[in-house]
Length: 471
Image (cartoon, rainbow, N blue to C red):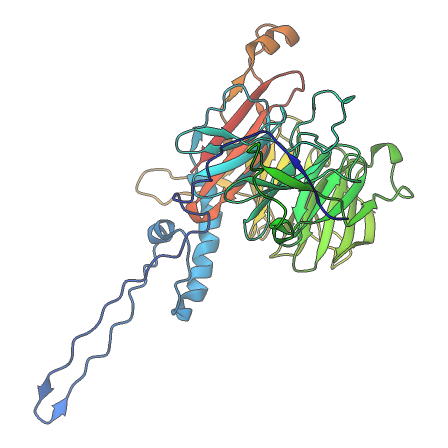
């Protein structure tokens, strides 16, 4: 069926600022020095060897350069790899917070870096926006509407739970005005491309993962996983600005494949897909459902289920990520992060306990061998998979001594954010002031050594938000 078109509200959104640079900054330029020619002494001509390029081997130069691996110097590859790993290990203890002002928005659920200074976010109040982390300026992005709106459905109460960029950072996938629909925007302009509202999910989209530049997968509360083919070139001839009304138009698409969480091994009443993670190395898609199961599909032009297994900790499994270096899936639950090594058919890395006030793991990411855990109690924890222990605070007995591990778990505690005082007075006992923010999302900009963290009050009855730039 050919793509159909519709209109959305007129907007004049400026292109996402490219002048600030992308999150993948070029490597530092190598300093070059050339030697002069030698002088003749008697009958012998002495020629000086050309000097080797100066290699800046300190941590300071690494941080200044942002990215390692200058072309033409393979001899430094091993050192650069070690230094990069050391930088990842030491970065958390160097991070300092600057809170961002988001106004009255409610709970930041999802986030991704667009470039060196802009982050795109989705909220519980169904707002999609771009925030400039240097100026706090917010640009709202109009949401796409279904071709046939469901008038019986009231305002969405779940919000936007997922924002994902494709590998080349040319497309952004998220939710539409109807949270059951998959919306795709073009980058860097943020123009609408297409909306997956035809024969798709019947309930809220909780998770999205890109399998390639043109294929995305969405997971829904209705217990299904949908595969979408998204190719902007297909729509170039048909999607254009409506000349008469000045409205941006976009295609309406259907999924190319849909798979349901198996009912035979799970509780049909709670088989909601909560998180997705794609392994490009194995071309496999992992998913966790709220009934405490992990599911794995072979992902090609369609989805072919490989297995479903019961998780060791099955309460509130709300986040999932994949570690390329160790070929592991990491699952966040109410009190633990579990590691699944499907090659071994067993869990050969012990789970880590992350109890923080009994509020559970709310966001999870992994880079190289460091797992970052965002909790429901307003803190960030860091776990070293190689050492199989949390990173520790480092301290020195006096300023002249080198800092050493103190034995105390390294924990970054986020600020108070903003909370609606009317909700606080209406729903909670007077005098209770401690309402830490759940950290529902975080994302790194590794070339710039920055971390964006978003969230809001854990209690559903409280309206508020938290956003912070850690650098």
